[in-house]
Length: 314
Image 1 (spheres, one colour):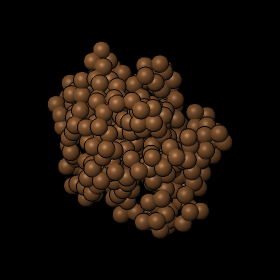
Image 2 (cartoon, helix red, strand yellow):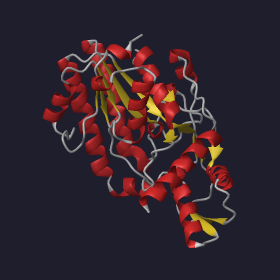
Image 3 (tube, one colour):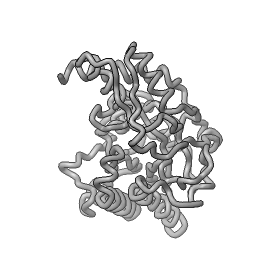
Image 4 (tube, rainbow, N blue to C red):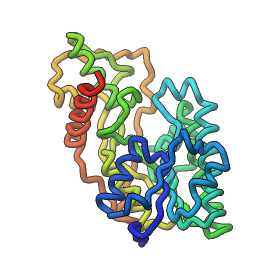
């Protein structure tokens, strides 16, 4: 087990949604001195440039690579080339720089969207290479999958300790309200409907897709536990292990926000992958991770944060 309190830790994307919570966990729960955590800004360290990757890994013991270019479905439709290039070039160069400089451990963060579109749900890690992912996610998914391949190759040839974690849909306080992710999007729609006196919200699709949602504080606890305890080449699913349909999720958010209006489903819009849930037994077995935040509790905290954010920014 790695004692993180004694390590220099690089967190790329540390100023982002998940990154901020992860840095807080390291400081408050692991008692890592703040000066031992390096969070490079994109403005100063564009990781698409090799020299910046070399600069940020210098003198670091641990690299947690959260930085990524992603977004909602519309963003993925508009920028597949940019999404593929930016994500793969950041990951490949950063891991190579980390290996060359003698970094002790590299934690790559991938996504369950990388699973084959036709994989039976809940997804198990041994199904990871059994087909092509959903087309809309393929550029992002393959860029991230190459981090797994690279890490396994570097482990075999150089003895480099790289691990790869597959995150499900993460939500919680701090999500950008403009991101387009479903939970933030629905909270924003309800807030705007109430402000505008509208008795309805409009939502894409049919409400049939089933997902696994993981509260952000649980997600970062899993990442840190894996950093401390997991040293194997196989990828690990990180999720709640709970399923909910889009329709039931939206009804729950409406209930928690006391919204009595109608939900209008635009069935001309795509549903995306109908079922995307994961088997979480490997995370439990390997580093004893189990999500502890019930969905309703996490949603209440997220709604409260968004309402506070709206008051500050509008």
